[in-house]
Length: 183
Image 1: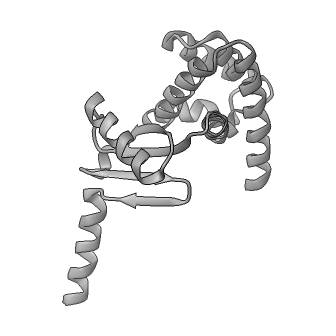
Image 2: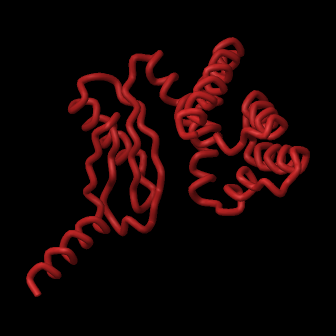
């Protein structure tokens, strides 16, 4: 089932990429999708809206379009989400977002990196993290930022299959495990 969802997500993401490329809206759509990804992690209500089997196609479509209009999303992004609702494919939206952003980065010769922080990073901090990642990876880096207050402090950085977890939460968990070993 997971590979079926990945295949479905890749097909929809590629279709969206081609439409966005045709309409010269690659960055607008990427920005919208990044905002939607953050909304999915911040809002349990929005997550319920896209995953609920109880809601009709029309109800999901109206709900998603209302959110997109309020967010000022590009018309292509809003229409894409409307099509997903009509086709009952909203459940795969998180994978579609990742597939779209990965495809965009790949075609631009960039490496996609996910950075999760406990608080929102300032512009200079974002530039510093991006530059440090560029030096480590050796090519342009496209950084996707998310905020997870449960980290307490520090960062979690994912580049491809590599992950660096310097969050305070993880350090405390390791300390707790070490303390259990002593007693």
